[in-house]
Image 1 (tube, rainbow, N blue to C red):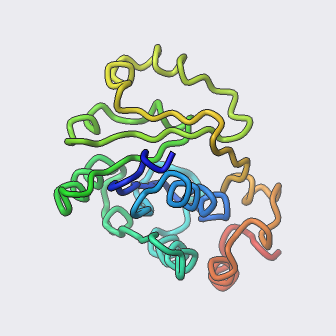
Image 2 (image 1 turned 180 degrees about the vertical axis):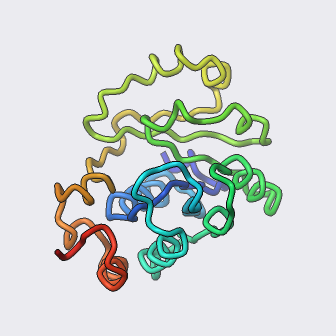
Amino acid sequence: MKALGRGRRLLFGGSFNPIHNGHLAAARFCRDALGFERVIFAPNGDAYPKPGLAPARLRLEIVRAALRGEPQCEVYDAEARDTAPLRVVQTARALRQGDPQRPITLFRGLDALPKTHRAHFEIPDLRVLVVDRAGSGLDFEAILRAKPHLAAHRARIDYLPAAFEDPRSSTALRAGEISWLEGVPEAALKLIYAYGLYGAGR
């Protein structure tokens, strides 16, 4: 499967509210098993329409702490510093233009695939990598049938239904369904405690 990511960078966007070990496991899988040269984490900004979002500057700092020492992983901070609510397409386009020799693949959970904008497919050589989250109950083919613009670009979507599944989520952490000590990288958890975020440690 390493040929899937050879010569490519993976754009891993999201709120990372907070980043957790499931995110890191996905990044390592894409780097080690699929052969992506870089995994680029792009936390979104304060205007992202999601309730209970910690300030972008803190989420950005926490993501950087979690990735410290993680080979071939980096942070792209433009979204976190912007006031626009959504700018994944702009991020992908900017990364593609900044290094046209290494094309971009957009990482998507199956639950996020329907939100993939048609403008992504206007970016030269962009592909979409779709993985399952365990127990999502979603159907890839049904999503394509419901979203004609995705079906039209099916040849540019790589769907791995059973290669990687991880049940961990930021929602489960905040709800207390997963232990903070087990669910979050140590460096990130120290900052979460220090800033009093998400009720961790109470």
